[in-house]
Structure formats: structure tokens, C-alpha cells
Length: 192
Image 1 (cartoon, rainbow, N blue to C red):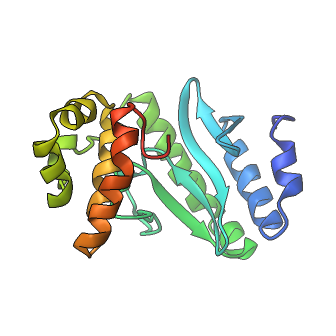
Image 2 (image 1 turned 180 degrees about the vertical axis):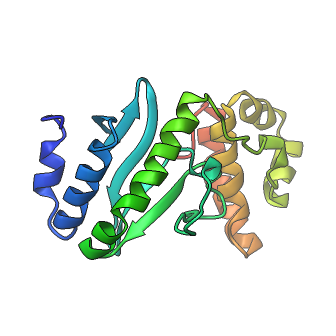
Image 3 (image 1 turned 45 degrees about the vertical axis):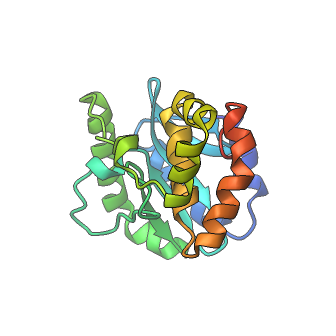
């Protein structure tokens, strides 16, 4: 146990028993415990393997390369259609965790083997993401915008493309594009 991470387990109220049990299971698998993104993160060398995080309705293990795991027990969840690599195992009570302890360790050991093997998740290329018509029109009209967008990192480009294409109404897509043009021109990401 890493004392720098202890505060996370003492501050949580709703999922206290659940995350403490998750911590014990993960540490029993021989991973190092660190604090990353404000959450307990379990690593093998420099590689992130699994994270414990809490939400309003559940707490979860997040496997960074969960898409590469064999989901023999059908318990891995893709958070949203846009999440490419990570997968969660969600819990709503401590009994689920204790009953699944052996299975959870199997998934953690499998994730460790993925890291040891150096496997990588094949991510969709930015060019494979849909470009909202409203954004494409602005890119065609404003060469400076097109140039600024192309100089953004692929991750920032994808974030904008997803943000612009999500709304069903053209009016909302247009408003999003207009609002983000200054950020793009300044080389900033969606969340700055």
C-alpha cells in the first residue's frame, strides 16, 4: 500500500467498503499503487494497468487496455461508443466484489500479461472520424482554421470532431463550431 494513496480510501463515503476491497484484490496481484488523475492507479513498471474510480451510481475497475482482454465472464463494459481501449468492471455493492474476487484477479493478471507482452490497442485514426458538415464548411471557408486544426494533436482533433458531430440539430452543431473556432485558432484543445 502506498501511503500517498491512503487519503483516497479514507475520504470516500458512499463506496468505502467496495473500493477498499478492490484495493486489496489489486494489491494482491503484485502491482504498484500510485495516485494518478486523483484516483488509485495500479502499474507495472511505467505502464498503467488498472484504475479504481467511483461514480454516482457505481464504482469500477478501469482496465487501460481492456479491449485486449478476453472477456470470458462477460463483465467488461465499454463506457461509451467513443472509448476505444479502456473497459470497466462496475460494482454496486461489496458482495459483488467479494464473490468475484478470483475472477477479478484473473482479469488483472491477464492485463498484466498484456503489458508484459507490450501489446497495444489499434486506435481509430483521426481521419476515420466523421466530420460534421458545419465544421467542414468552416474548414473550407477559413484556411487559417483548417491549418490550425491540422496542427492540433490527433487527440485534440478527435475531441473536437466528436464534440461537433454529437448534436442531432444542425443549429446546435453550428453553435458548437462557432464557439470553438477561437480555441482552435489559438492551438487549444476542447477542454483547453
